[in-house]
Amino acid sequence: MPQLRLALNQIDARVGDIAGNAESVVRWTRHAAGQGAHLVAFPEMMLTGYPVEDLALRSSFVEASRSALVELAGRLADEGFGELPVVVGYLGRSHDARPRLGQPAGAPQNCAAVLHRGKVALRFAKHHLPNYGVFDEFRYFVPGDTMPVIRVRGVDVALAICEDLWQDGGRVPGARAAGAGLLLSVNASPYERDKDDTRLELVRKRAQEAGCTLVYLAMVGAQDELVFDGDTIAVTQDGEVIARAPQFAEECVLLDLDLPAAPAEAPAGRVADGLEIQHVTLTAEPVAPYAPQFTGEVAERLEDDAEVYGALVTGLRAYVEKNGFRSVLIGLSGGIDSALVAAVACDAVGAANVYGVSMPSAYSSDHSRGDAADLARRTGLNYRTVPIAPMFDAYMNSLALTGLAEENLQSRLRGVTLMAISNQEGHIVLAPGNKSELAVGYSTLYGDSVGAYGPIKDVYKTTVFRLARWRNAAAAAQGETPPIPENSISKPPSAELRPGQVDTDSLPDYDVLDRVLEMYVDRDQGRDAIVAAGYDAELVTRILELTDTAEYKRRQYPPGAKISAKGFGKDRRLPITNRWREGEQTA
Ligand SMILES: Nc1ncnc2c1ncn2[C@@H]1O[C@H](COP(=O)(O)OP(=O)(O)OC[C@H]2O[C@@H]([n+]3cccc(C(=O)O)c3)[C@H](O)[C@@H]2O)[C@@H](O)[C@H]1O
Ligand SMILES: Nc1ncnc2c1ncn2[C@@H]1O[C@H](COP(=O)(O)OP(=O)(O)OP(=O)(O)O)[C@@H](O)[C@H]1O
Ligand SMILES: NC(=O)CC[C@H](N)C(=O)O
Image 1 (cartoon, rainbow, N blue to C red):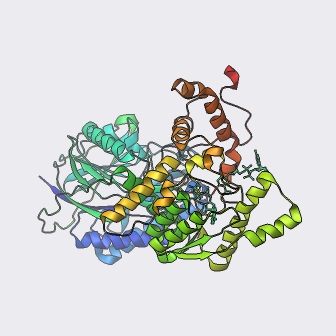
Image 2 (image 1 turned 60 degrees about the horizontal axis):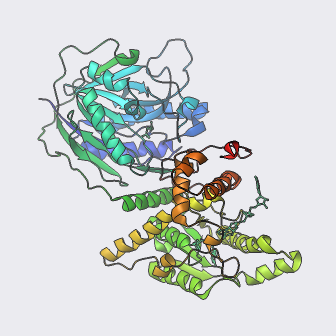
Image 3 (image 1 turned 90 degrees about the vertical axis):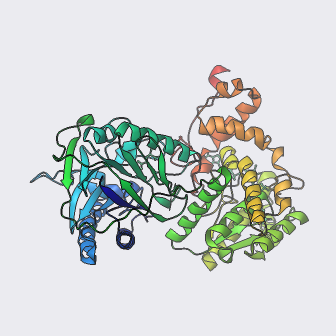
């Protein structure tokens, strides 16, 4: 039986940094070559990063990606890796896979190529384009119409790109029809809670359908709101997991596989969905001395809270680093939200790069100030106090505000103070709002909602509590100081904008609120369905109305890591100006 050593590079790419990403490909290929790999693979759109959004519509960017691919092929050969086939994702054009003489280069495509002996040996494009949730690929790309198969050391390897596995038809049955011995899919699949279980089931099912071993190579890292959790998987055609990479970590997964020999005659013709087989034999590679060594490791899965927390850390770290910052700034109230954000920030960029500011007003309780200072001591973040009372008094002398206007002024003075320190010292401001608050508009525009990035904007308040407890327990289990003061977790949440204020003055208990919001926001259920699930009709109407009328606030909120199936970003697009009110039509 022929044997292949695969090098599956579960790595990050930076959107728009074509030269830097090409450099990564060279560096990781060098490592793979040193490990005796026979076939090297990189994630979907490795060369450009993913998703490139409207950059795909700009010719200069598409052409830069296409020419970088050709240069990269030459560079790999110059560096001595020419005999090693390298599969790399890039942004291409519709005629790349099948050039048509005398015709323009065509529409943008989500492509991958096999680089070998200094040349682009094969190019192909994603056949199934995702166009739901956060994906808009019909806006940018036209689908690929070939079934790519490469023969490497006597094994026929069929190739696919991400969504090609998620939809029926196309490349999975195509791989079976082409008689492939291995199906290799390169991916950039954004994180959502529990998606690893869905992916595993999918990959198992598709391996059975393809009738061969299936290798699913994932991207890791983050881009704006999307987190890529890794989770590279290899399964046999019976669905047995033979390798699984760790979550949230860059890694070259080396895997030795015994695979069926390809038939003497290369497959040809059309297969599922009319895909035309594009077969390339990568001949005459020297057969290096080979002994199976990497039989596959199955990394332990993180439990649910650890996984969500890992996603928040990965998302924030990538945002800070990829945008050229080193440090972050947070208003510390002593409450749970800012405390969790601070803990995530310390894990993401190191406590030495986290700056916290306590900004007490006349209504700030002693325990709040004490809890903020305690958080700073526990984590080691940089801490200072800037009282807002003198600024508040100056405004009040000029404006004589009352009620909500007076309350919100405190929040806005804190926002201005944070942005002023950000400008002066170069830290980016983190907005501490959670998903429950964002849903019902429980935050002050240009006040506590200022910031560059909202690390917990897709985390419901009940999960905020759970994650805080989990993070403290994880620290205690390792003999470290738990970062979050117990008092920040146990006291009733309060905005402290007027004497004795608590969140439950304006909102239902978070347990109830979050369950209703999950039905409305995450599952798009209507008022009647939610009431039928056993919730008070009046309460449901109020929560839904608050949610509908807060769209304008959400649109002005900073980006932040998506951890749910439906975050307040590209996943949920609603009109701001919108007269539709759930339930009114049945009243
Ligand atoms: N459809 C629409 N499109 C565009 N703008 C719209 C709008 N509707 C109102 N607006 C504007 O929005 C303004 C109202 O929004 P905004 O100024 O935010 O004020 P508002 O939402 O009225 O008040 C802020 C709420 O957040 C609560 N809160 C909770 C937790 C923390 C904090 C904190 O600050 O630390 C605050 C606070 O207790 C209060 O209930 C209006 O004055 C109007 O200018
Ligand atoms: N006294 C304060 N000093 C510094 N920042 C503050 C202060 N009060 C409020 N903030 C900022 O405004 C944000 C919103 O306040 P809010 O009370 O909603 O959240 P929290 O205090 O973190 O959590 P909780 O809702 O559990 O009290 C805080 O997270 C914090 O960033
Ligand atoms: N990049 C892609 O094609 C991703 C789509 C796929 N359904 C996923 O979420 O994993």
